Image 1 (tube, rainbow, N blue to C red):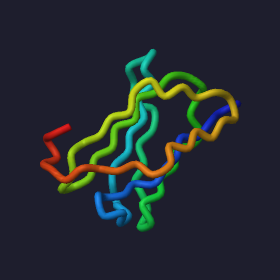
Image 2: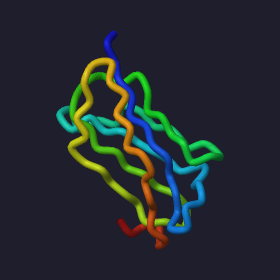
Image 3: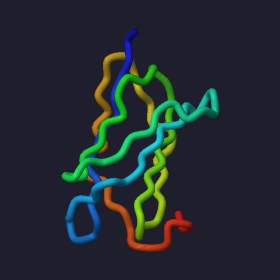
Length: 95
């Protein structure tokens, strides 16, 4: 299968890595969560082996507002690097 990867690094407002955050990728056409991963101790995450398409990435971490990135277009064999993704302090129920 010709799959792709969405990756990035989670940071707080001071630039420190956020470990253990939950990242879920939802296929926007099928309205289906296709993969869930956690960020590593260095804040890096990789959502691998997903089919080409349009995705919403939802990131949740304790003590931070949830963050959604929508309309992420992934092509075959593409590594879509979001770079540094900053989370804002707040309640997990906020987004």
